[in-house]
Length: 203
Image 1 (spheres, one colour):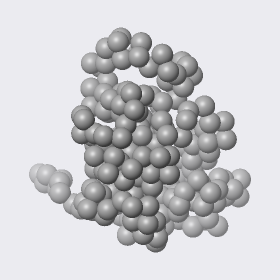
Image 2 (cartoon, one colour; image 1 turned 180 degrees about the vertical axis):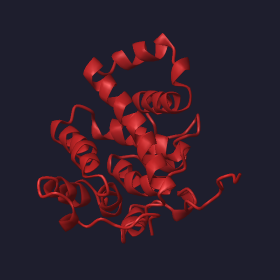
Image 3 (cartoon, one colour; image 1 turned 30 degrees about the horizontal axis):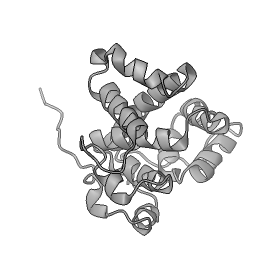
């Protein structure tokens, strides 16, 4: 259960309800997440709406995008996001073992472009101010500038979702972990459940 109450679709403005529904079902399953975002309908409209627009326009290969999202989510240890995106990456042809070990420098099953995307996602997440021009030269050999901008945006935005999900302890939807296991992944490869570890200091 999240740390705030769920906002159901009939509690938000009518003009935002189609985005709520589409994100929760067709884009998702992200029902528990959008129930929390529902506290701020403008966030549903603009953040979820942005992701839906990106999906409709799709300039990045799905494999590229999902590598970045899984990498960032594993770095940030977001169980919710790893469980949702690991199966999508397996669907793109990566073995479950590759997805589980994707942060390992010598992870088998990645081609040169996969490794480049993986390394870029790590760099954007951990030390964006230290990225060298050589990495961008390598990216430009495989991607357009439009694609690089979206890859960077989606990588950074994934970090936001990781933190948002864990800070508010958004729960997993029914069936998500089961679907992941059905794809050959192991629950042992998921980050641990988010739990309170930091208490606010008192005066």
